[in-house]
Length: 66
Image (cartoon, rainbow, N blue to C red; front, side, top):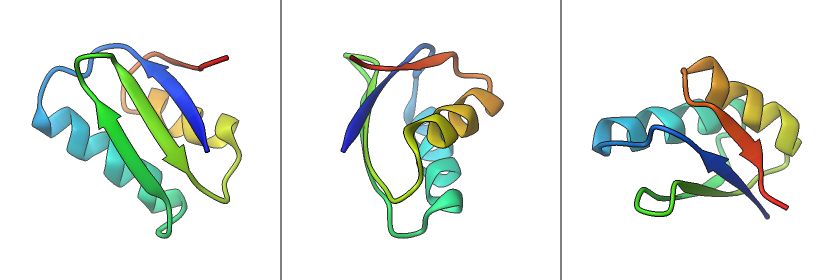
């Protein structure tokens, strides 16, 4: 599991878009979004960098949390 720090998660629609983008790469992925902390926890067989790029492609600046 890894965590992304994601900017701009403002509403339920944002959560849905992020979740769908991640699950389009890995339909078995487990995604948990904490809007108030701007964090997305992901358990996936895809690399963290691939997931980060998919989230950024939606217009949400993100980085892999240390």
